[in-house]
Length: 312
Image 1 (cartoon, helix red, strand yellow):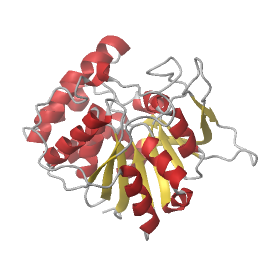
Image 2 (image 1 turned 180 degrees about the vertical axis):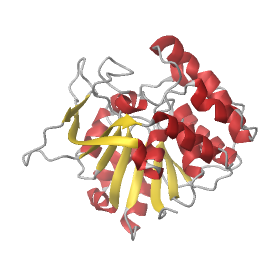
Image 3 (image 1 turned 90 degrees about the vertical axis):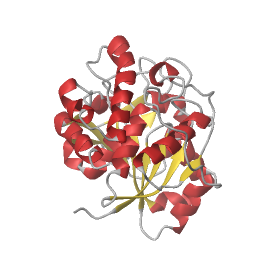
Image 4 (image 1 turned 90 degrees about the horizontal axis):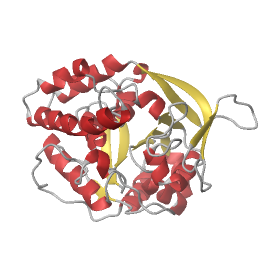
């Protein structure tokens, strides 16, 4: 059994965020979840927080949930109800949550938890990076307590999914992404180049559809709802499960092929706004700030998800 890793998950649920959260909750021996922080992204903050609370009940989990930032650092909020539905988690009929959020704001939770951590903490970023960027601006010393940020965000050869050049999470708050990418924290990035390989094809999700548990029924209904957009409008054969790549990397890093590089984000207004740029020819003047995933063993990735979710 792998040594337990202490993590914080920052999220904006969102259907693929839901899969990522459930996968993390299904791995208690490997992942110790110190807290879940919510941020505005796929839908406004009230809804992302409400969805995180409902998913916690679905999983029978006890992770504390902290409400975070309701808007990006500079830009107006852009949301994605056209993909995820009005609630952000349309499809399953999940009951109202039994418990609420913690009193502390997500930024303060990040600062206090990281400052007091005896051992390094991994921060998993599944949505816009606003909460962590604000925490780093407030107390830059917390960067030394983060062993790595594993990020679902960015795109390179794959192009964008909200503009021709920009991936949604980075586009929503590129200034936050800039703070995180230049913080000195080691980065592992899951861009669209790899997450587009994680399409929920029928043979890959058949084991999930066979689960008769509440989790199995819920994820089946999630997939049936959300695949409509990507199949109809993006030409995919199935909805790409973007965000679970972050958790899968922590559980089975061998599923991924990574390349070191220096990643930055374009902040200027115009057609390149929010675009991530990678430099792969590394030298002493511009050392790598992270590793970027470009390859995924997709069938084993879905096998991992199905095996873990079957434990609920």
